[in-house]
Length: 88
Image 1 (tube, helix red, strand yellow):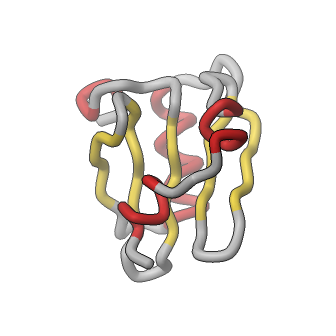
Image 2 (image 1 turned 45 degrees about the horizontal axis):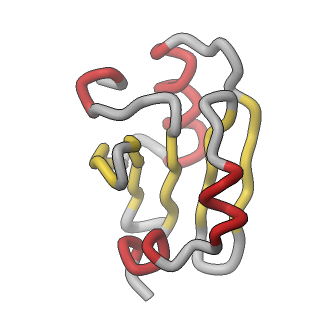
């Protein structure tokens, strides 16, 4: 299943759990989240690089910013941001 399909098929429980205080990592077999409360843009960027590597792209999905690393088949959902410009 490609990344967009995976996102579109997340359970309602996961969608409901999305919160500005967390970043959600979604791989082919699991969903994880980690705290990002009161993080600056720079802290979010550093965390994305740490978890996704430097080869990720930012896109929008359902009024949220997502970071995708196609090579690792991994996506991070960043509910705190609604527009890509807010993260760059």
